[in-house]
Length: 199
Length: 239
Image (tube, rainbow over all chains, first blue to last red; front, side, top):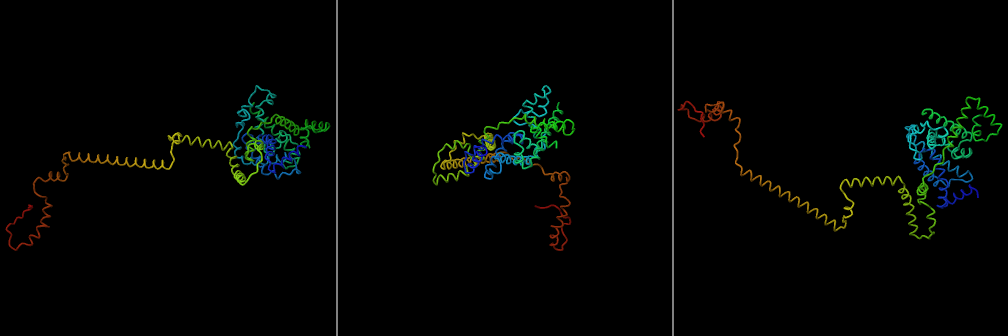
């Protein structure tokens, strides 16, 4: 029995009212959804709330999932992406006051971005390997537009292929590729600019 | 064309020959070269990000928010029982209560409830109310009735005591007034002025004129036509 069949069976059991099947689905997908939410929203608190909302929505609309139309992961990613976009629109005003020196999330050291970068004693390789650099990249990711951000998250962090991403975002594959390329380039430029300003 | 092949080139999906052409163009083109370099660098940055570990309680929160139970495995161990009317009523009741309980168990709600409790206890301690005193309160009807009458008796007694004190005070004040000799009052300023100005001992001229007009004239009118014996009238009043 392959992955798709296992998930299809779980979904059917869940629709029939089997709470153990639902728990199995939560166990399987919560980590992945949490990571997408965390990389998109930027903070652990928002990621937890959004992950919970995604599962609540999944639980309510599970009967609308059609096994024949696509993979369950694509459906889950679509639900997640829609909620993330809604969240992005709702919190637009809050983000307008954000600056480069905002305090990072609790997953990483609580230091401003500029102070993390301003460490001339480190080489570039050290930066790539370090935990602080990951936090810098994570914060730079938040500066990308939501279209580019979701594309690079799904491709480079979730390792989804272009077809799956196109299905989840409901855009053509060419658009997905273009967004990924622009997202990567924009992120690199953003990080280079940040390093140049500080060092 | 270059941008269309960029993703495949970065992913290593281009054939060797096409890759050579692609890289050759990237080296000479001032637009495509930086784009390729930035895209490769951006991908490397993104790949440096590791998967983050979700909080341990997240699964329980999700299950509590969706199904209302923290873990289905714990409940799955319980044997399935045939439920009667009472059991079905309980299930119906749980369908309302469980979502509420799941909401109440959320950390945000617990935090808010904690803050409210803390504020309330702070206000009570500032007001001097002790929890031990509250626990000793007897709420039986007979005890409440007794408390009511005791409090009423205290209020009446206090009122009577105050009234008695006021009566004593007023009596003492009256007694003092009656025993103290009366002091002469201050002289009237009009009298002093008259005494200072008129030293003749005679009534005022104005007063004389008034008497002649208002009192002597009717007397004179009533007299016979005989010549008066006294030709000089006196102004002295006889009291």
